[in-house]
Amino acid sequence: QKEVEQNSGPLSVPEGAIASLNCTYSDRGSQSFFWYRQYSGKSPELIMSIYSNGDKEDGRFTAQLNKASQYVSLLIRDSQPSDSATYLCAVNRSGGSNYKLTFGKGTLLTVNP
Amino acid sequence: SQTIHQWPATLVQPVGSPLSLECTVEGTSNPNLYWYRQAAGRGLQLLFYSVGIGQISSEVPQNLSASRPQDRQFILSSKKLLLSDSGFYLCAWTPLGGINQPQHFGDGTRLSIL
Image 1 (cartoon, each protein chain N blue to C red):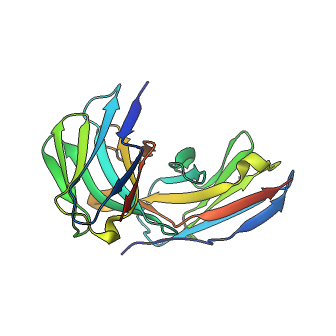
Image 2 (tube, rainbow over the protein chains, first blue to last red):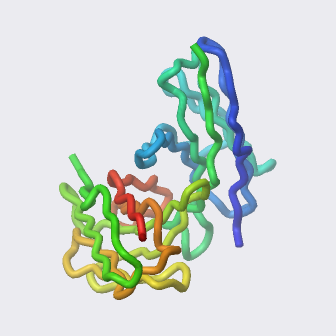
């Protein structure tokens, strides 16, 4: 069973700080990687996609991918209280199931005013 | 633009009762469709997926079934609900093929079994 591992948290950061969220995956054949944000009681919302090694920036969010280390991270700069949510890492499965995703259990982020 | 609808938003059902949850997608054709369950404090578990009308694959053995009677309609059903069926049920879609595509979720149905 291919797995995606995340620290469950909670990760607590002060407002304006950088929040760093990490994810490791076991399927070496995975090609696409996603970060979702899930507010309490709501459905997951896609915030970042990354497919190549390196960094990808979108506003205050930066996704980082290292396929050799099987590691994906999400940095949130200038964290705001509205960023308080659970962040889910998702990785596509390799081979004939590459249209399916495996999700981590999520990291709960709390941004303190 | 594409939108996904799920209903009902919340549901309270007694043990042993039947279940029908519906999901529809607008603004696209031939999507891949997925049903997930998220139990309290746990991750997203893929229950069923469909790559076309009438084509359903089950990810895990369970008390539930799924059907896809129309291209953009996906239904999750049960004949007799168990206490363990409680959870947050999410429908998701990707474009045709879905390879390396993110999945987009509906608002979900929160199901409580009494």
